Length: 217
Image (cartoon, rainbow, N blue to C red; front, side, top):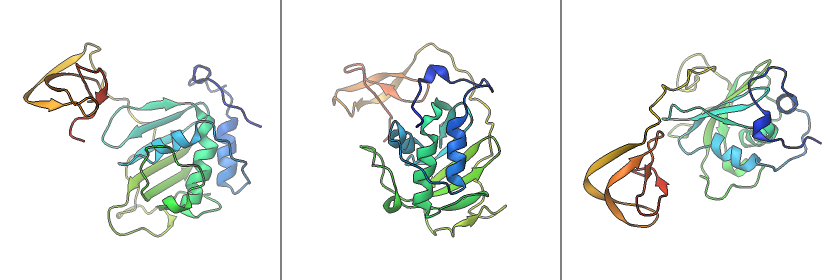
Protein backbone atom coordinates (compact mmCIF):
# COMPACT_ATOMS: atom_id res chain seq x y z
CA UNK A 1 0.00 0.00 0.00
CA UNK A 2 1.31 3.46 -0.90
CA UNK A 3 0.48 6.08 1.68
CA UNK A 4 0.31 9.86 1.13
CA UNK A 5 3.19 12.03 2.31
CA UNK A 6 3.53 15.69 3.17
CA UNK A 7 4.29 18.36 0.58
CA UNK A 8 7.44 19.39 2.49
CA UNK A 9 9.00 16.04 1.67
CA UNK A 10 8.87 16.71 -2.05
CA UNK A 11 11.33 18.87 -3.96
CA UNK A 12 13.48 18.57 -7.06
CA UNK A 13 16.01 16.21 -5.46
CA UNK A 14 16.50 13.37 -8.00
CA UNK A 15 17.02 10.96 -5.11
CA UNK A 16 13.44 11.48 -3.93
CA UNK A 17 11.12 8.46 -3.83
CA UNK A 18 9.64 7.99 -7.30
CA UNK A 19 7.27 5.14 -6.53
CA UNK A 20 4.15 7.20 -7.27
CA UNK A 21 5.38 7.95 -10.79
CA UNK A 22 6.41 4.32 -11.26
CA UNK A 23 2.92 3.19 -10.22
CA UNK A 24 1.32 5.69 -12.61
CA UNK A 25 3.54 4.41 -15.42
CA UNK A 26 2.55 0.82 -14.59
CA UNK A 27 -1.13 1.81 -14.83
CA UNK A 28 -0.45 3.31 -18.26
CA UNK A 29 0.98 -0.06 -19.29
CA UNK A 30 -2.29 -1.71 -18.28
CA UNK A 31 -1.41 -3.10 -14.86
CA UNK A 32 -4.34 -3.26 -12.35
CA UNK A 33 -4.78 -0.45 -9.86
CA UNK A 34 -6.51 -0.36 -6.49
CA UNK A 35 -8.02 3.11 -6.07
CA UNK A 36 -6.67 5.44 -3.38
CA UNK A 37 -8.90 8.47 -2.83
CA UNK A 38 -6.53 10.69 -0.84
CA UNK A 39 -6.39 14.01 -2.66
CA UNK A 40 -7.01 12.37 -6.03
CA UNK A 41 -10.45 13.78 -6.90
CA UNK A 42 -9.27 17.29 -6.02
CA UNK A 43 -6.11 16.94 -8.11
CA UNK A 44 -8.14 15.50 -10.98
CA UNK A 45 -10.36 18.58 -10.80
CA UNK A 46 -7.25 20.72 -11.47
CA UNK A 47 -6.13 18.53 -14.39
CA UNK A 48 -9.64 18.73 -15.90
CA UNK A 49 -10.07 22.46 -15.22
CA UNK A 50 -12.88 24.08 -17.21
CA UNK A 51 -10.52 25.94 -19.58
CA UNK A 52 -7.92 23.16 -19.64
CA UNK A 53 -4.51 22.65 -18.10
CA UNK A 54 -0.97 21.40 -18.73
CA UNK A 55 0.30 18.80 -16.24
CA UNK A 56 3.82 17.46 -15.78
CA UNK A 57 4.17 14.45 -13.46
CA UNK A 58 7.78 13.94 -12.36
CA UNK A 59 9.35 11.52 -9.85
CA UNK A 60 9.14 14.09 -7.06
CA UNK A 61 6.26 16.45 -7.80
CA UNK A 62 3.32 17.33 -10.05
CA UNK A 63 3.54 20.67 -11.81
CA UNK A 64 0.41 22.13 -13.36
CA UNK A 65 -0.46 25.37 -15.10
CA UNK A 66 -3.95 26.43 -16.06
CA UNK A 67 -4.70 27.66 -19.56
CA UNK A 68 -4.42 31.43 -19.75
CA UNK A 69 -2.34 31.68 -16.56
CA UNK A 70 1.48 31.62 -16.55
CA UNK A 71 1.88 30.48 -12.95
CA UNK A 72 3.17 26.91 -12.48
CA UNK A 73 1.63 25.28 -9.40
CA UNK A 74 3.38 22.43 -7.53
CA UNK A 75 1.44 19.56 -5.94
CA UNK A 76 2.42 16.38 -4.15
CA UNK A 77 2.91 13.44 -6.49
CA UNK A 78 0.76 11.02 -4.44
CA UNK A 79 -2.27 11.69 -6.66
CA UNK A 80 -0.52 10.73 -9.92
CA UNK A 81 -1.65 7.07 -10.08
CA UNK A 82 -5.31 7.92 -9.45
CA UNK A 83 -5.31 10.81 -11.94
CA UNK A 84 -3.85 8.57 -14.66
CA UNK A 85 -6.26 5.73 -13.81
CA UNK A 86 -9.34 7.97 -14.01
CA UNK A 87 -8.19 9.75 -17.17
CA UNK A 88 -7.64 6.41 -18.93
CA UNK A 89 -11.19 5.42 -18.01
CA UNK A 90 -12.55 8.69 -19.39
CA UNK A 91 -10.64 8.11 -22.64
CA UNK A 92 -11.89 4.49 -22.84
CA UNK A 93 -8.36 3.05 -22.83
CA UNK A 94 -6.79 0.13 -20.97
CA UNK A 95 -3.23 1.01 -22.01
CA UNK A 96 -1.37 4.13 -23.14
CA UNK A 97 2.15 3.26 -24.27
CA UNK A 98 2.67 6.02 -26.85
CA UNK A 99 1.67 9.70 -27.06
CA UNK A 100 -2.12 9.53 -27.37
CA UNK A 101 -5.01 11.97 -27.88
CA UNK A 102 -8.68 11.24 -27.24
CA UNK A 103 -11.92 12.46 -25.72
CA UNK A 104 -12.08 12.26 -21.91
CA UNK A 105 -15.77 11.73 -21.24
CA UNK A 106 -17.36 12.60 -17.90
CA UNK A 107 -19.64 9.55 -18.07
CA UNK A 108 -16.63 7.22 -18.03
CA UNK A 109 -14.89 8.81 -15.03
CA UNK A 110 -13.78 6.34 -12.37
CA UNK A 111 -13.26 8.62 -9.36
CA UNK A 112 -15.94 10.33 -7.33
CA UNK A 113 -16.83 13.81 -8.49
CA UNK A 114 -15.14 16.71 -6.69
CA UNK A 115 -17.82 19.14 -5.39
CA UNK A 116 -18.19 22.24 -7.55
CA UNK A 117 -16.01 21.00 -10.39
CA UNK A 118 -17.05 21.15 -14.04
CA UNK A 119 -18.85 18.16 -15.54
CA UNK A 120 -17.83 18.52 -19.16
CA UNK A 121 -16.11 16.29 -21.71
CA UNK A 122 -12.52 17.29 -22.51
CA UNK A 123 -9.90 16.53 -25.13
CA UNK A 124 -6.93 14.82 -23.46
CA UNK A 125 -3.35 14.36 -24.61
CA UNK A 126 -1.22 11.87 -22.65
CA UNK A 127 2.51 11.46 -23.25
CA UNK A 128 4.34 8.66 -21.39
CA UNK A 129 8.04 9.39 -20.95
CA UNK A 130 10.88 7.46 -19.33
CA UNK A 131 10.98 9.69 -16.27
CA UNK A 132 7.71 11.65 -16.49
CA UNK A 133 4.12 11.74 -17.72
CA UNK A 134 2.79 14.80 -19.54
CA UNK A 135 -0.95 15.49 -19.74
CA UNK A 136 -2.79 18.27 -21.57
CA UNK A 137 -6.54 18.89 -21.43
CA UNK A 138 -8.68 21.31 -23.38
CA UNK A 139 -12.47 21.82 -23.58
CA UNK A 140 -14.40 20.27 -26.43
CA UNK A 141 -15.33 23.13 -28.77
CA UNK A 142 -16.48 21.36 -31.93
CA UNK A 143 -15.68 18.17 -33.79
CA UNK A 144 -14.49 15.34 -31.57
CA UNK A 145 -11.14 13.74 -32.25
CA UNK A 146 -10.57 10.04 -32.86
CA UNK A 147 -8.56 8.35 -30.13
CA UNK A 148 -5.10 7.49 -31.37
CA UNK A 149 -1.50 8.70 -31.77
CA UNK A 150 -0.95 12.45 -31.42
CA UNK A 151 -0.50 13.94 -34.92
CA UNK A 152 2.36 16.29 -35.75
CA UNK A 153 -0.03 18.89 -37.18
CA UNK A 154 -3.70 19.71 -37.41
CA UNK A 155 -6.34 20.41 -34.73
CA UNK A 156 -5.28 17.47 -32.52
CA UNK A 157 -1.56 18.21 -32.36
CA UNK A 158 -0.10 19.12 -28.97
CA UNK A 159 -1.78 22.33 -27.76
CA UNK A 160 1.34 23.64 -25.98
CA UNK A 161 5.10 23.02 -25.86
CA UNK A 162 6.31 20.08 -23.79
CA UNK A 163 7.96 20.76 -20.42
CA UNK A 164 10.09 21.94 -18.80
CA UNK A 165 8.26 25.23 -19.00
CA UNK A 166 9.79 28.62 -18.36
CA UNK A 167 8.69 30.06 -15.02
CA UNK A 168 6.51 33.18 -15.20
CA UNK A 169 8.24 36.55 -14.83
CA UNK A 170 8.80 37.55 -11.24
CA UNK A 171 6.43 40.22 -10.01
CA UNK A 172 6.75 42.67 -7.19
CA UNK A 173 5.56 41.29 -3.86
CA UNK A 174 3.98 44.65 -3.05
CA UNK A 175 0.19 44.54 -3.30
CA UNK A 176 -1.30 46.24 -6.33
CA UNK A 177 -4.48 48.27 -6.07
CA UNK A 178 -6.77 49.03 -8.97
CA UNK A 179 -9.29 51.86 -9.29
CA UNK A 180 -12.38 51.06 -11.36
CA UNK A 181 -14.47 53.64 -13.23
CA UNK A 182 -17.69 52.03 -11.99
CA UNK A 183 -18.48 50.21 -8.72
CA UNK A 184 -18.03 46.43 -8.91
CA UNK A 185 -20.00 44.22 -6.51
CA UNK A 186 -18.21 41.41 -4.71
CA UNK A 187 -19.78 38.07 -5.78
CA UNK A 188 -19.44 36.76 -2.23
CA UNK A 189 -20.87 39.50 -0.01
CA UNK A 190 -22.43 41.82 -2.60
CA UNK A 191 -20.64 44.94 -1.34
CA UNK A 192 -19.79 47.34 -4.21
CA UNK A 193 -16.43 49.07 -4.46
CA UNK A 194 -14.38 51.00 -6.98
CA UNK A 195 -11.05 50.05 -5.36
CA UNK A 196 -9.73 46.51 -5.02
CA UNK A 197 -6.44 44.91 -4.10
CA UNK A 198 -5.24 42.83 -7.06
CA UNK A 199 -3.37 39.58 -6.42
CA UNK A 200 -0.56 38.31 -8.65
CA UNK A 201 -2.93 35.80 -10.31
CA UNK A 202 -5.30 38.62 -11.30
CA UNK A 203 -7.93 37.95 -8.62
CA UNK A 204 -9.47 40.89 -6.71
CA UNK A 205 -9.72 40.98 -2.92
CA UNK A 206 -12.94 42.46 -1.55
CA UNK A 207 -12.27 45.30 0.93
CA UNK A 208 -15.45 44.38 2.82
CA UNK A 209 -15.22 40.62 3.32
CA UNK A 210 -11.56 40.00 2.32
CA UNK A 211 -12.50 37.10 0.01
CA UNK A 212 -10.94 36.88 -3.43
CA UNK A 213 -12.70 36.47 -6.78
CA UNK A 214 -11.90 36.53 -10.46
CA UNK A 215 -13.29 39.68 -12.10
CA UNK A 216 -15.40 39.19 -15.19
CA UNK A 217 -16.55 35.66 -14.36
